[in-house]
Amino acid sequence: MKLALIIPCYNAAAYLSTLLPVLAEWLGRNTADRELLFVDSSSKDGTADLLTAANLGRVLSVNSADFDHGGTRAWAVEQVSAEVVVLMTQDALPTSADAIDRLVAAFVNPKVGAAFGRQLPYEQCHLFGKHLRYFNYTAQSYVRALSDSPRVGIKTAFLSNSFAAYRRSALLDIGNFKNGLILGEDSYAGGRLLLAGYELAYVAEAQVYHSHSYTIWQEFKRYFDIGVFHAMEPWLLTTFGKPEGEGLRYVKSEFDYLRKQAAWQLLPQFFVRNTMKWLGYKLGKQHKRLPLRFLPMLSMHYRWWSGSSSPCYNSGA
Image (cartoon, helix red, strand yellow):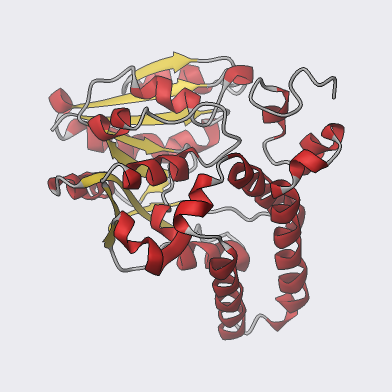
């Protein structure tokens, strides 16, 4: 099976010293059937030069202003001819080269259209970030189909391009990643694959380190963007269910996690953080009712609002 690993990069130099040796080991196991493709968005820290010097794969460049979460990945997928395409973010570090092969092994099942691995928190990540990884990425693998949606809800279509793989033919069958989304190109693809009759596999044995220590304001902005995404793609909630039930389960789980860690001093922040996430999401879903000039200030992906897909485009805002 021919494999391609695609990594979008922007100012990734700080991650390369640990990431590149793992990629080199994976590539060296079967060079004839494996390729690496790096897509650099006009980095200013020498990322492209470092990748070129490493000589592990092709390095293609795009203008940072033109980067699109779905569109750039769709374009990258079209640059390779592999049967399975693995996607990673620059800040995801596989625990070993075996992690990538374990993820790809999910495609032995002909029904699997996409697979994603387990994300472990970095040691320095704060407790809120650690809990998010433990909640979303459990130790038990599973395979989900559209028929699971009445039981699992919105999590049926859960997928993360921080460490995911796609059967290329299945991805092209659904029209590839969608251009113009503020985020969520992975969840969009996951939902479309399920509707097309494919299944999604979670491979807990395929592990990467990947986490964020977001501030409360960053959490607000991220959930604002999720609200915008759900407002733009209402079929996801119509098909798989609203996220409120999953959100309540998450809040209960986080409280229990902090309690078990005896982190009582974090309880005030727990209440503020979750209130801000809820507020951000609700405002994001209602973003069309807000003054256009304020939207980039509320968003983590503020540059998206100047693009042709956003409500601000040609609005004068």
